[in-house]
Amino acid sequence: MRVVLAEDSVLLREGLIRLLDSAGIDVVAAVAEAEGLLRAVDEHRPDLVVTDVRMPPGHADEGLRAALVLRRQHPGLAIVVLSQYVEERYATRLLSTETRGIGYLLKDRVADVTEFIDALRRVAAGGTALDPEVVAQLLVRRRSDPLDLLTPREYEVLSLIAEGRSNAGIADALTISEGAVGKHINNIFAKLGLSGAEKDHRRVLAVLRFLNISPS
Amino acid sequence: MTYAELTTPWDRVREHYSMLTLMRTAHAVTGLLIALATWAVLFALITPSLLLVWTLIVPIVGVPLLLWAIPLLTAVQRARFSALLDVDIPPVPRPARQRNPLKWLLVRMRSGSTWRQFCYHLLSLPIAVASFGVVVGIWCGALISLASAAAVQARGETELAVALAVLGTALLAAGPWPARWLASLDVLAARALLGPSRAEELAQRVESLRESRAEVVDAADAERRRIERDLHDGAQQRLVSLAMNLGMARAGLKDLPEPAREVIAQAHEEAKQALKELRDLVRGLHPAVLSEEGLDAALSGLAARAPLPVRLTVDAAGRASPTVEAVAFFVVSEALANVAKHSGASGAEVSVLREVEGLRVTIRDDGRGGADPARGTGLRGLAQRVRSVDGVLTIDSPAGGPTTIEAVLPCG
Image 1: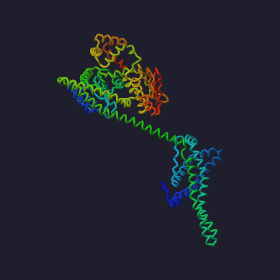
Image 2: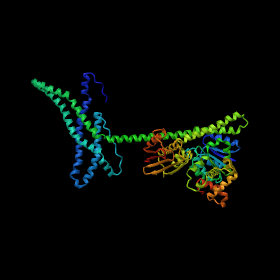
Image 3: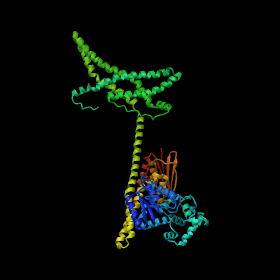
Image 4: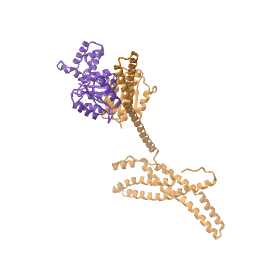
């Protein structure tokens, strides 16, 4: 797997390179600002981009904006956005184009190296990796919609789907059987009005509904 | 001007005839000249306007000219007091600039200060005539008496000469006193009529306090943002790196002895905890998303992190000033922390509405109530921060609940 890394703190950039190297992931370019990120992606055509949000020159949300540009310019490019704080607003923007191959994680998560590398691989394979905090934030204001019909358990299952977990992963997290997970998921689909005809998309659509984002 | 301690009689005599006395005399003389000129100007402007009021055009020109001339005359008088008596008459606060000449006229006409100045200029002539008459009269009388004493003495009329000499000396000796009293009288009139009134002085003071307070509040806010940036660029990155390295060690070094692995695992957990605590602290200082995306985005993050369900409604079109947004964020942050700590509530509701009088921030919970700003520093700090932007904080928390905290923050 080939990765382009954008992070302005030298310390962290070097650390991340070491971490990815040790996991057998090839860091083809490591840059310190958003402009450089766009150029590096054009040049190296990586499988995955890992980028910080706050970078020079403005130290605001440059990395996030670069990620949105990359998403437009290179559909299918997997992107993981790392940030000191997760903000629902940023998540909504990131996910408003497509929920495949996207990750939005707190920087803290790099400390749990195995989970972090797993998340990167999952996103590179077209999955999603949303920080539990992002999911929690997205839940706050989603009140007056079919989601209200979900039971607390179904709600939990749906938020784990949004984090990007597989059925097995969800079963693990909730210590229930995979069969039970499947049943919950079917209930969720039914309550959200996602019919069987859209079978392949239902998972993604449920997540979009969950995140209150209309697919474009 | 400083006065040396007057000890010897000689000092007193010197003080009696110092430059000051001369200046007071000069003040009386220039006073008369200026007062005459002032009256000439006032007369020239007022009389035609009164006599030819029916032409309309004459008063229409005359009155604005008069209103324009009054401050100029005041400036001349203030210069006289400052140059000759070393007395500073504080300037009257300038009314805000008006582009519309009619408005300018109205503001000037309605200003009490304009008419007080006008009164002084009218009074200046009688005062000046009195001052000039008395002061210059005494000095001239003294000189004439002494001169004629000498002349009379030459003719051999000694008694008359002595009487004249005594009179001249007495006038010379007494002269500085009336000069001082009359100058004081003039200063009194000028201070009362040319300077700002008590209300104007207070208004000026309030304005300058308001400005300096706004600067202090903005500076504190900027400082908070700077600290947030510094921590973000420094300590936080370092801690992430530390936690990551420990994480790598923990995942990679499987063949270490068990106690060593345990120590690494513990250090790893502690580093992560420290990271979380620092993140919460820094975000409480000033969340970056508040500057970039506004209250709505910052508050939804806050609500999500609260340990109880929070329903959030933000209906605020446009952005308020950074300081007001920071205060609004702080109010919600503190109030939610209070709810979580003390109220025993099962949920809270936060709403931010843009209204005519400003941003209305309301936090309502279904807890046990009884919140009292007198106890605990949380609510008091809240009230202080709200007051710093001229906002109003109301806390309604009957025993048994529910509690409603409401802040209205003017948006200027």
